[in-house]
Length: 485
Image 1 (cartoon, rainbow, N blue to C red):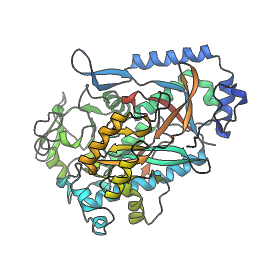
Image 2 (cartoon, rainbow, N blue to C red):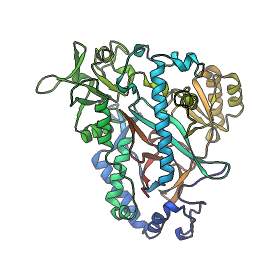
Image 3 (cartoon, rainbow, N blue to C red):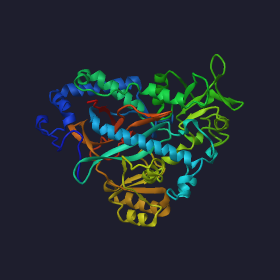
Image 4 (tube, rainbow, N blue to C red):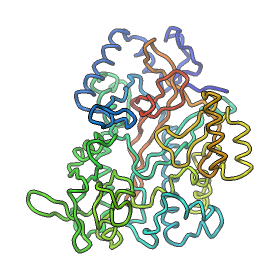
């Protein structure tokens, strides 16, 4: 299996840095890195951890319980070596992301309206209408600008092709409540704090304006005619794993962070309780899953949402971002059909390719998967966060056998993919500089137009040889640099 390193044309870890064959867009950084004292770099790592802990940049791990029974708080490890992407590569990636998210929004609209793609037989009807994320309540509901996924987090990986060159693939589409953008912003602030001179030596495209673009996108999604729509961030509360991000984004946008108990409905309008009395809400940037949004419509026991919210939404008096029912398009069983969506809705060939995928609901794909479990990555179609998956080459015989039984019992609940050798990037570990596998999550904003900041969240698998980059599985993050020239 060929390997691709982002910084080096070969992988000379352990050699002197000046002997390493460095890719052109990393050249200036590599020269700087070779001059750094390891003790100084170690002190910078400690400083970053201290600042992140002081600011409270943590996430909760639900499997780890503290004395009060809440998820324990952990820092997401931050690495000092940035992931650098050339302007040429980013321009291609940006075109592919705009294309993909545009097609996915067209698909969700179609699913809840004319269902042309289902009638054409390009996507199996039962995979949509029996999907756990399909919401019949959204059939015929018109949303502003026909946009359903206002904030999309598209996971991209890079792997060596047959010629040994790095090729980008889309690994997953996160269209419901994609998280992590706060870490992208905080990682950049940290790098600028620790190494300000690096930014005078590199023309790194800025990302700090993301909250401004996000607020603009949310306001453009308002159904109200008012020139100044009221926008709020709806959080499940402080025990949610991404609560830091919810509070951070609300603060950065200068809008209110609310919980379900802060909202109520009257005459099909949504209001927020304030010290000055009720205030109408026009746009809700929700960080709550569909099932918990409205106890009258979905889970009746939910206390995280607002009773009557869906009725107000269907009446067109409030916007919910991302839209209810959007998850039907980010299910892993729908992912293999995205290239066909791009051709169907846009008449274009995909710019960014999918990872080859076997759908275990198909007998021939199931047979292949069962015969090659030790070589493949197998994922639950509704899984997330690195859970519910098998990495065949790293799995024990017992784990492989357990997945075999799960596949036989419910084949339609799984897909399989080849074990890509994700690109690596130099990373500081206890033993020094070493290659670690990475991915990239750019954030795509859709209002009246599609826009994004140049870059995204680079996640890194800190365990040697691991391909699982999720923070819940021990992954860390890096700053992502897009060079402007």
